[in-house]
Length: 357
Image (cartoon, rainbow, N blue to C red; front, top):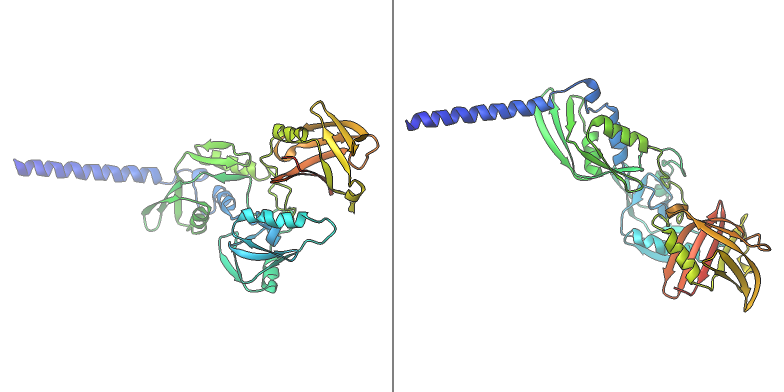
């Protein structure tokens, strides 16, 4: 009797294992061609481009969009030594560049350094000649390149693969861009994979989109290719206001009543010295007054609209044509004892400064 029960259990176990194997196999058997996630599929190419390492975030240092310099390293910004331990130290370099408008900003890197390429390859550069040679292979400012920066993946992403030659199944849980890039880069022509859905993608405005099929994921990445400013230029402070809020900016502008012009550059001419003692007062009712000591010399109007990188300050002051313009807010810098707000209009620049904070 015991032997019969044991035999029955073995038969049942065998059937369960066989059924389980058949179920897994049926999930991974290739479907129609348009549903295959293969090495030459359009979706694989799009995901690989999205996983590329963005080299533009440290352009203030290397002015190269196709690689990044690994921390830590040392640079000399306009002759001043800065130890760069993280991206937070870019602000120290930026502040040095911002101190003067009538000089040529320079960066000298202390070699050797190690850089990471778009495909996550690491290269050691021993001198400026090697650095320049590698940087020359990158696309220039705002030129079209391979990486897709306007969308990211929420990891982990799980992919099951069936090799039609070896008839082997594998399951990979990918935890970051590098693992995803390497997985697709190592795709074999005999591999057919299934992505385990849902897959969440994150747009440049931080909106999270859940995709449930390969066509949905492909459509979402395709739509993101030119959906944002990839910031592939060398203007190191043009994206500092990503998180700026209109109401906070307006409160800052109106609560301080002693703004002076620290910087005014029009048509490449530095005009800030024309306003050494002028003080600007922005009232909450939309009035702006320009004073010299206790005397009001000019008055006009102001408005602020937008959010983030698109906050605009419109100033209209009869008699002050140099300041009267539509200025885009680029940076708010608050440090103990000093507050600066920076604006641009094309190549023109304006900075207000106050001891109020």
